[in-house]
Image 1 (cartoon, rainbow, N blue to C red):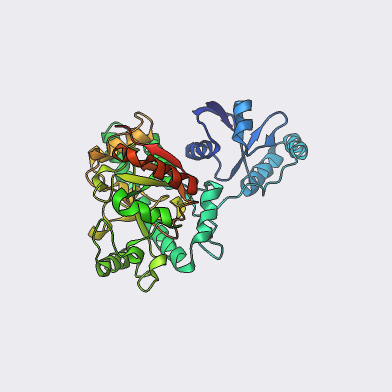
Image 2: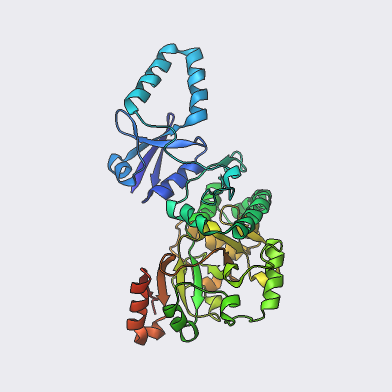
Length: 391
């Protein structure tokens, strides 16, 4: 769906199918205010519904709060009649500037864990320009599942990731341009990683499915005592101490992170280089803002990031990997075979994975088709879709 976006006198045409993506793209536009609301109609009125924007086919981006007041003051000094017109428009509009939430860096994991991290949206003229973004409400609400220790671990990662990510942006941009990508395509890639790239947990049907069927949670190694990777919990404690500044050192098994992978090239077969863990997988939701990311297996002490500040991890990708991710993120291709990635991109999910709440789908290898009824029962029990991989 093509939407015309008007910011001041400048108009942009954007192809988009949902409100979250529309807001994310607007934030990348050079002339977008850092704090804005979306207006439609004549007279203009605020909207938060994509269906209304879709029907109007044009949306006006209007600065909010402090930015708007500065603009009004300037207008008063130059043209009183224009100011009166603006006041009149606001009276007709009748909307409240405080209706749309925005988040600042100081909000992150403070007293209210449901407040979410700020964003750095890279501007072509000022790559470290900071703007606010509005994640899906369900992702923000999921932050309330973090206990204080888990929130502290996330905050620790976010704080050091921000600086590292912004430092590495110019280097990654240079590499992207050498691969014949534009800066806005790198920006779109970072937005794709932040908002869209699937977070999966691979599992072995024979070893794990029955346990999943009986449980309400996906469990970690410390809870189950076994896994498809290494079962040495002492080593795992050491690795997690390195990653999370010993915050989890004395934690209970249930409170420790759960491991997955980022399907960063959107392969419908999942992440093939983790098939040793299982050739079927769960696709997660309501976990993105409480997930940390590494460029490879965490036992190797790699770079660590959060979804918003990922550029320093992206800097460790090979040119082949970077090119593949950017092609998918910019919709040049729908997906790539995950074998294009030299190593899998690990994720660490903080807080619980509740099967009935945090699954988009269960994706099954067709070799398990004989167990279709059992898989359907699992999906029905946990309110998720069943997807059978293409052969």
